[in-house]
Amino acid sequence: MRDEAQRQINLLLQQQEELAPELYRDLALYLQVLREGLLHAVQQACFHLATQVVPERYNALPAERRQAFQQRLQELVQRTSTLLTIEQVMGLAAQQQRRDHRRQRVQQQRLLDAFLNGEGADAPSSSQPSETDPASARSSGSVSGGSVHLSLDLPVSADLFDRGLPGLPRPQAAADQPDGEQPSADQPSSEQELLQSLFQMAAEGLQLASSEEPEPSSEPDSAASEDATTLLAAPPDLDPRVTASTLPRDPVLQLRWWTHFDRALRRRLRNLSHAVNVEMLRLGLAQGLLPMNLLDAVLDGQVEALPAPANLLRLPLPLGQVLGPNAPSEVLTLLLRSSDLEYEQPRLRTCRKRLEQRRRALRTMAKRYRSWQRRLSALEAEDQWFQDHAHNLTPAADQS
Image (cartoon, rainbow, N blue to C red; front, side, top):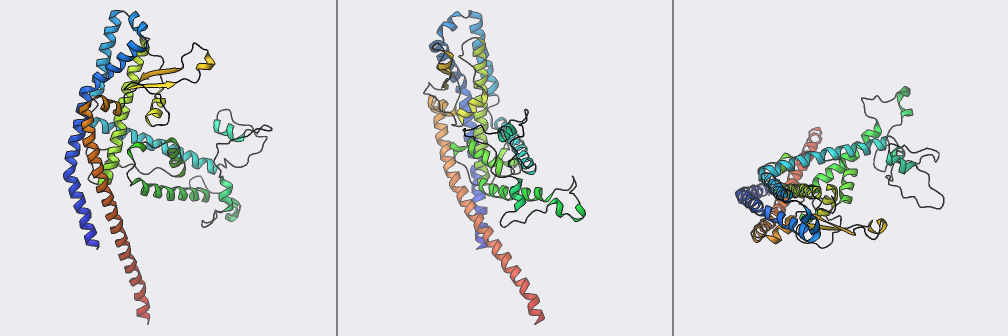
């Protein structure tokens, strides 16, 4: 059984290695078709904004500025097109992966420090919140009479670990140290060791879960799941194979590689959209400039947008009633999206259909690969168990 499982794994790896060049060519073809139709898509979106939303402003522009604007659009699209290759897109994906990893480590360290410093415990009501720390201002602020106070602090604190957790060793207090010895700064305390062990256990669980391929619509994850991942576990180690310029051999890693590719491509289109919006704002053709994090929230599905033409984003402005009846109630801006580009370009839509067929086949292969890996791991564990059991029985037999 063990040899059969290893044979099936090698067979799947060989099949995937043969299919990888075809997938690479399809992705390269998709980017080529995207580059060819990108300028027309940007011009169509800007045409709608200039002629249907603010036609009087566009008519008031001198001819020189209008010509310069058209030239500027071509320059921006040309600059982005040079970056729409698999090597360039995966280079951006590697940068995103390293940045996210650093951010997760910083947030995890902050959470660890908060536990060790006793934040989240019941603080005296007379303590004043720090002006430089908004989190402490929220947690230590006194509750006014009759109001409901919703704290954003975690429901656990260092006191919980002082009392001990079921199944975990109770950390030794400083008073229990021999001769009143205090832990040195170079040597972590028992509390810190306990917390780090908890983070490590959660990180191992997340690493097992990360081997499962996420759904395309859920990458990147929502804000709630991302925050939970950040708070509960330390980030796993970086894997350069999932952001390399070449496809990995492992089908599970290929799915993760593809996810990073889609994410980086979406970032390229978002950056181009923001650059075009800046140029239109300079000419007075834009109703406003939306921040880039808001554009990311729309792309992640965290903000619901109103119906709009292709590659345009329409968002309501809730402050319109506050600013007065003449204030705009919505904003319309440029936002390039793969779905809109594919809807407007039949060739690009055909490339996407072929890619989705390959993605479904890759998921099936990755599922089989994981199944055989788990079976092989179980068989190896059984062999180790029987070897250890036989080793323990040998001394008893010699003594008899």
